[in-house]
Image 1 (cartoon, rainbow, N blue to C red):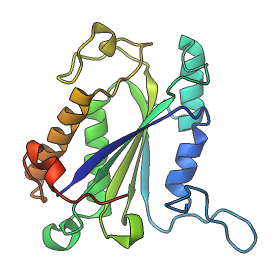
Image 2: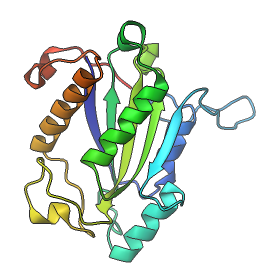
Image 3: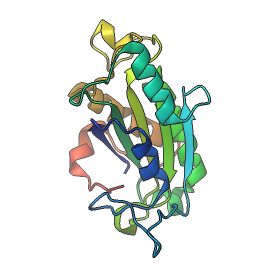
Length: 205
């Protein structure tokens, strides 16, 4: 079945996220893979889109908003949140899941769960050690740039306000995992009930 994970980052270089998504990296050291001339190697296959960036580069849009609201200026501030939806490796062969379809689903998930956040959504066709699982990376600026409705995983009024920051709580993660399961069920992909998450093998992106 699909898995869902979260990584928070204090890295102020928002461009590093896009570089990781679009260029080859060593999955263990997380360092860029270089060719014989010392140049970055572009990933062979991926889909990518930005949301709520106003036509600007993701990094530029995030830094501009941070300055506007006076947020994410300290070293200890969480600058971004990285979520990964890893579909079951069997979904491509058994259920016809494609990279293009996964990208559409990832963008839908991002719009629904992280409204008001600048985001970059990128889909890769393969996972760690060529496990064959199509997976979607969703990276959002921790700062919210627009007021949004109160969503089920939120528990504070500030969670809806522009100029405030996203919080990934335990309750939020459980909600997101359940939403991924519902998404997979709707699309006839391998899924399971939310409480079974810890009982299934995980596939690393």
